[in-house]
Length: 153
Image (cartoon, rainbow, N blue to C red; front, side, top):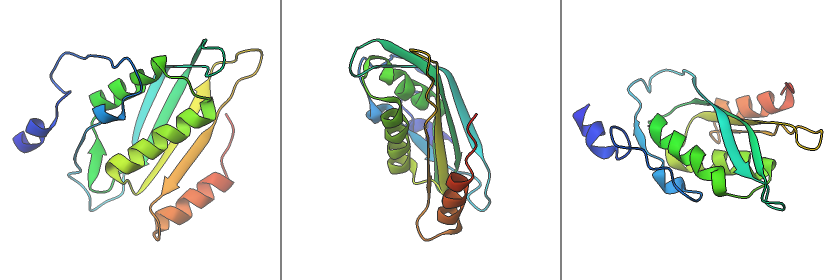
């Protein structure tokens, strides 16, 4: 356990929220139960990003659900990472894809999905969904099935 603590830079220290998009703040730790599948869910109900055209803030909730493999994302580093979007301009659809890509690169999960539940602006809300299943495994098939059967909220 101390070995993992020594590798984590954010946990236990004063939080300094990055001023710009900062995937480098993400950290992982060892999954202590890689022999079984289990779900880990994160909800960020106060997610903020900027419209890339107007620069106005867009508010929403980001939901991340994953089945870990060997590594897991450390929650404080994830919080700082998600907060780093506050001054970053991207469309909602891009944001969920960027988050998914960064987390897949970081921890190579068996399965992961990211949902953005953005507050309406101009009378329209946007709820993009993206997922990934480890290639060549049952999780790839799971991703295909969940995508086919995704229910809008």
